[in-house]
Amino acid sequence: MAKQIQAIRGMNDCLPADTPAWQQVEAKIRQVVASFGYSEIRFPIVESTDLFKRGIGEVTDIVEKEMYTFDDRNGDSLTLRPEGTAVCVRAGNQAGLLYNQEQRLWYMGPMYRHERPQKGRYRQFHQFGIEAFGISDADIDAEVIALSAELWRVFGIEDQVELQLNSLGSNEARADYRSALTEFLVAHETALDEDSRRRMHSNPLRVLDSKNPEVQAVLADAPRLHDYLDEESKQHLSKLCELLDAIGIRYQLNDRLVRGLDYYNRTVFEWVTDSLGAQGTVLAGGRYDGLVEQLGGKATPAVGFAMGIERLVLMLQSLGKLEGLRPAVDAYMVLANDDAAKAGVQVAQRLRQQLPDLRLMMHCGGGKFQKQLKRADKVGAQVALILGQDELENQTITVKWLRQDVPQQTVALSQVVNLLNDLN
Ligand code: HAM
Image (cartoon, rainbow, N blue to C red; front, side, top):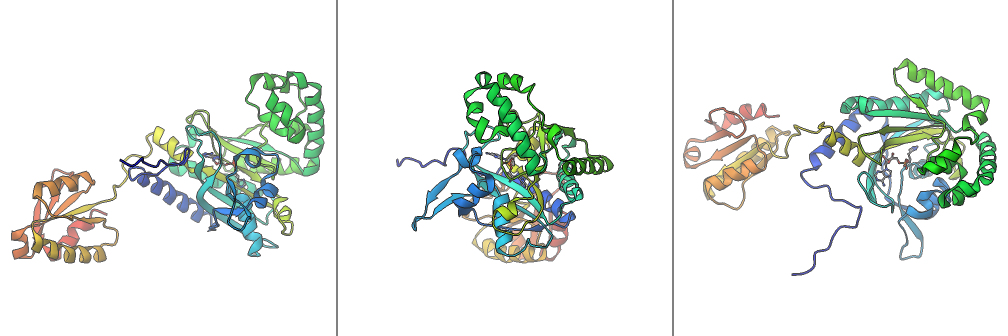
């Protein structure tokens, strides 16, 4: 037998048993973004490598070691998108959507990062993201966070997630803090691990994120970001907090929260959960007022977030929130013989036109009546629609309920629509 080819490690199929969960999650996401008036944007999966180098930052984990980068046949360096924000800005700039305009956009789709796969962390994963352009006031930061909170409400997991919030300040404030932090880290170099020593000069703020308890112990005495915040950023943060208080969104101020992408300034936030193990961040984002200009557009304030859909689905599964999903088939047509098969396709065609929401599967390939009924059960149908010899002669159809204790009914073909209407 020929050797089976396997999927790439960390890139998973979404099998038929799982697609109803994904469809439900996606449908609810669409409902929430629509209720906030956001518009969908779709963009390519492959972009110029430079976009991510310039957008995300040369000394981030993503750009240093996680991108799927390759030369295409023309020798151009291309990269599978590791995230959507830089791409959204590129698309917005290119289409002239951002300058002097407001845009509130959302997107959903696969992203690619060459990370070590584990539960909740994959090499192909899916993000739902929103990006709001053209508004510098903290009210839009509050809206973006409120939209994320609405997701938790809709999915019934508000009590499973916690909002961590911080401000990175202006670029100048962050530069001052960066110098102070570097100075501190250099003075404590011997107590740091290799990773932190490497980052100490290139990206010192990321040292704050270290998971190493020894590094965290050293950091206890490090200068605090909050002490370096500029006045305007402080006001921005306090307005945001007031707005969140007003709509009853609880948050934890955490001045160690710095995020792994370079484009942020002022507001950064993450929704975290205990129910996912190590990969506890379900949704993360913040303000990135410099990115549009950095990618060649006119200066435009912006704020957004992205959520990991796999992480949300895992959470919903582990909390038992994905039960009772509708299977792919509502009704299965069982056919007595070739004549019935012919009549059956006509009946099915009419029913599908009359009841667009009905999921009707025809039996194909002949076979015994009992086998056909088993098949109807296996695909999860609520009813079997039976066309036997008697039915054919009398222009009727028999409806057999497969999951309810209701006697089967034989009705005129013209009446079956009324019976099936209730299935939707
Ligand atoms: P990020 O923190 O890199 O931010 O990713 C956002 C979310 O995507 C994470 O919180 C996580 O739920 C999910 N995620 C990231 N990597 C993986 C992975 N390897 N496997 C599974 N899920 C993953 C961004 O991507 C920014 N673009 C967010 C943003 C939008 N900021 C402003 N606008």
